[in-house]
Length: 340
Image (cartoon, rainbow, N blue to C red; front, side):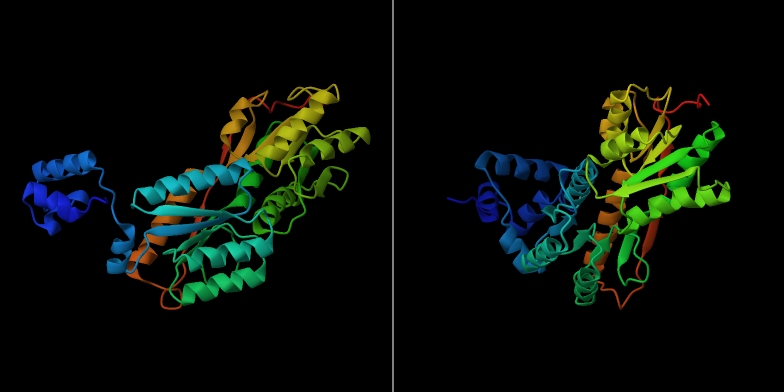
């Protein structure tokens, strides 16, 4: 039989409201009483009734998280940090992966809303029909935090300055003497993809690199993109002194292709990734990377979402927030001065 607050209150000769507050660590209840209540609750196997709690508060104490693809480590790390941040507010996180498919993304958004999530955090595919759906949900009172730098949208955004992040990597390589720097990444469709390529190209224009020194290789987003593009690059005798990869996964593919071609990293080709994933430390050599502040991004997104939920604010009645975080260039052993 399910243990209730009334059962605990009866055994301790306390009011139901006192027990309820003690279980929530209400400072109005003495430390001694809170400890007694929690200990008895543990002994009896008490579990809070979230359904009853939601009926009183009109909240489900859950948030929805829509991400592009769980197998890619960036989204796995991001999801973990968002879950941790939400738990600090006693919220559960319902996670939906779209598999980088806009149709599935819409299904995920509607599914999480149907389950009455109190708000959404979305790393969007950037299909504009879905963005309009998120704007509509926000106007209707479901707070939405977007993790994409999409201009002219009526949504709160917690994003990353990808342009200047990649410019800093290019400046570092140029300062070491690199001139033939290749960029490898997916076709620039989504904001992250466009911005990271823009950081590379802006630096090339500023540095007045000729077309013969500008090497951009884009293709279908895949963990094997860096590997395949690098093999093609080397087979055509277009050997760069350095490669700036769209992300760390692609950079690891670049490193594998360089080694398989009989060359060495960084002696023959330097490699820089982006995102700053934990797996960078397991690469050989350890990967230099433009690190996204993933944990800070998650914490800021959850903080902003909780502010919206608690204030019961909807976009339209308040100005959308725009938070831009700065990535950090982390220098490791995958980069050195060029041989020539």
